[in-house]
Length: 316
Image 1 (spheres, helix red, strand yellow):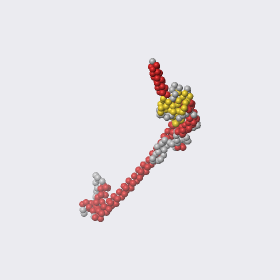
Image 2 (spheres, rainbow, N blue to C red):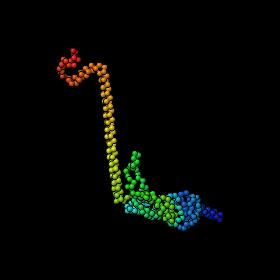
Image 3 (cartoon, rainbow, N blue to C red):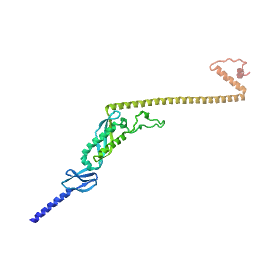
Image 4 (cartoon, one colour):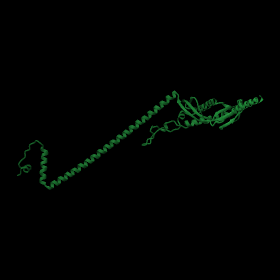
């Protein structure tokens, strides 16, 4: 009987020991970090390396925190710019926990961290947006979106750079300044801000109206420039066409006169050769040709017997 009681006690103690051992062991993987607490207070150093660890069972509690990058996505806020334009700004950020012990002591959880980041990033965003003009919030540089003309080297849009508002900072630089302003405040909570971006910028209704009106006026100015350039090009082409037509016409007239002069000279040469071959016959033929031209068709001619034509036709 005594042996049975001892056996049962040994088995119970073994089970309790096994349960205690299993309860004391915990695993930390590569994507997380752990802080062990005892009655709500941190104990020892945070466990940031993956591996198998042990704790006092039933007394100590394991608090797990994400080691990877996490996303913060705030609500859109209406913010006035330096030139008194009200816009809706939607900001996003990436952050990670770099000091889990400080993180646990200050914000306790990811939900608390998101609330702290709301205050920190929204405040930095408001300060930076209100310190700059609208054009610097929506643009990055003074570069004009255009395609250069290969023929003239002019801007395809016809926009003069001096007509645009100058950008001295730009949207990306403003985002960097928001990050620089928010980072020291986030560090107090064991958080490292990795990146802050202006995800979306929307104009308020009255600002949208002004922007659209400006866009329309710019398009109208560009269209007017296209029209004036087209009219100038048209006049240039018409002038070139008229000059080319006159040149071709004068060249044709010159060549025609040259051909006619050459033909007349050749005819005169042939006439001269014919005359020199038989002057009397040439004189007779020329007379006949002259009478043909003078008399024409369907006419009757009276010839005197003593005329040269009568003698040429009928003899002496």
